[in-house]
Length: 476
Image 1 (cartoon, rainbow, N blue to C red):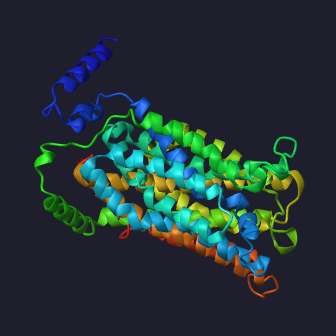
Image 2: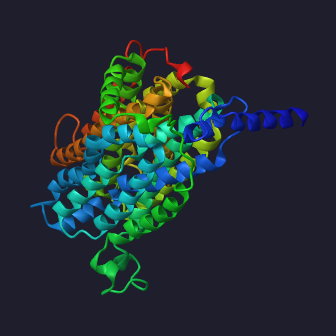
Image 3: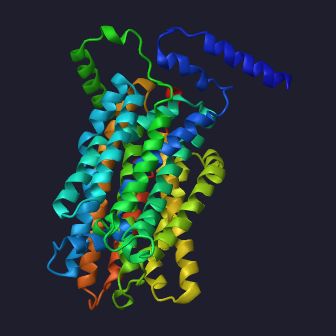
């Protein structure tokens, strides 16, 4: 007890010993002291922020097939996969084009303003998406949502600035948990709440708003959550150090950003961590697109013939399991294995798991339900382990003053891969549907073998010399 009291006194003294009293970063520097406790308030706020910002990425997957069908843009249902891929990718294309600029803004103006503006974009554009009745308008709103949502790079930098080295894995885990949970809960919300007039006619009448706009309710629910998150995020402390920043010239700031980007491209640990994140993100987005389409297609074409409710249940179960895993198990596992092995082990184990999916489609009844849920849970665990570990490696590869730009550069490249993922996944699935009678790898067999090949490439990227063992831990 005496030692705890002494540690608290040390931390209080650290708070008082601020070199620049008007600098928000200096006021929060005590959180990085080795004796600092876990910043629960900040971690939970960031968790909510990432959750509501990530739900739009995947909430459309369960109803995407039917939404494109309702747009009447295709000549046959076999073409739906292509247009579904474009719609799924548009948000990430927008993010890729602006992520570096948001990173520069986060390094210049602060992490908090970027997070606040990003939340506002979620409230505006995701709401508009739910009201779309035209494919091209829907594509534009998704693109703008991605372009104005630049919080992910700022949040990753923010986490490393509100935690010491002992608690950083937990902070990154919270980010990964929130992202992964949104990728699971988002589709669950989309599955349960889309087309409510058809599913719940006693609640939503035939002439109601939700009958005229069958995909608006999922967007509206997330808008309510995002509004609540905005009220919380506004109260968070800023962590960016601002020492005489008012005297800095605009041109000097721009030149610094250019120099930082050039410096980043010469750092092998940074490039290696970014490459792992890119390949994993591409694979995960392609898998998410294919999984949802595979679930709702008929048994006759190798699918599961699920309803959107069925898909929502599977993804909801996976989301709950992921939340427990990330909070209770991942931080200890990451500290035990180290970040590099935490990327390598799940990468290689993903290959046999993915190759088992065509066989799952031959099962029936409760056996199908149990095996499918186990496969979905384990696949979700593997993806989040790799992404979380790559975030830790990336943050440790650069000093604090470069983390906003570093994460912005990373988000640009990663977003390109994420944008390609759904488009490639949707096109691949559509191609598989057209070759049901092929002699070699017919239908979905070819689709999942292609996913397994990508997983193998991901594993190779975790090996030397692609992912150097050395990281810049001194930059923490």
